[in-house]
Length: 255
Length: 255
Image 1 (tube, chains in turn green, purple):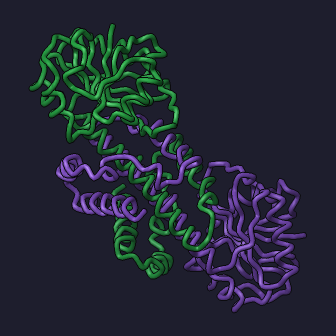
Image 2 (tube, rainbow over the protein chains, first blue to last red):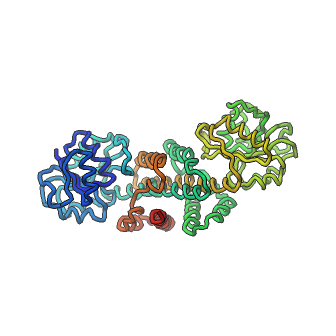
Image 3 (cartoon, helix red, strand yellow):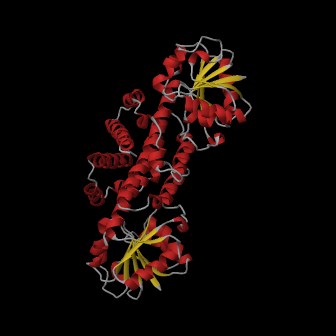
């Protein structure tokens, strides 16, 4: 089974070596950014190209991992072939990929990928979808080579998963960034927060996040809340604090 | 050194056994809620009371761990004595505690405490403050019995630490709760998110949160952002999503 990688961003930079390690034969890397293409190709010891017209036509799987905004546009420029085309996007439905190519699939590993960080795919749930039964089996086989947690999921459900991931990962990380910023402005090391952050994360392995909630907002301690609002001079942060506190209280009273 | 505990909430329920284990002699527990007082007293095998007038007068330290809203009011009802009075609040300054009693201190372990969860105090930074040098030494001794990470910090800095902790812990946990809610409405198990949440936390042990940011907001992928906003029917969540995305983008362009 020969695979060509279209895109060499953070996800592919983690995923491709794991695929190769699992015995998958990667034959070429494409990225329009030469640095990215060459770096990943060197890591995998395979050829690369930055020219869509030079993409080989004899692969079994074309594995797209591109920004949502350019995915379909790039796909349309690939020469027609009979291979399986798959993408890794949480929010692009299979149907819009099928418009371009009739053997289409999705391979969505639910994780945050950062250049230079190795992730263990065994821990990662991989969500797959395809329009043909035999392609679904192929994706299952590919997924199972990396993780014991391969789940068939349709495009509609996947987009909710992606939305939830934005809250659980991107917005969470931004809360860390705000906290770090607050401390650094006071010349305090943000690493003081790490044991607290670890426990906040560890807790929800055993407790539902609604039950794990602590702090002034869940107690609706307006004395503390008002003190904190008075400390925040940035109107965005003030609004964010108010909105999050209100929502914490709303969730607790909904039960 | 004899200690009396005033308050039997989540923090004290974790802290008191750790203090006892470190050799501190706890002689009495007070809580106005009999269930809380008796549960903690039983755990420590010491007497309890729910009557402020029955609090013993011969202790060396009176250790207050009460909601901010009632702390000062309760402190005023304790019979005057010459012991050290300490509280565990992030946002009550030492000065307002001193108004009630002249040997005052603060013992602030930066952690989220949940009933029934054991925490390892060795990992927790403890921030201390006192108005008398000998009391500061006493607090340092008490802190070092639990954690190698005991830091002297004034009330002004401590309130910023507390504010940062609200973002890093309380608001983060609420993002988890929103994500769980989104998945559960789609009959998807929120535990799918745990590997993602773990990695988001693990990452910032090596990377500053600003550098660890991923997702549609940091790329300012308005296509995905607008799709997500259209999916959120709750106006609070829509506003929260918009505000967080704007702020992520603001932080990234500020660099």
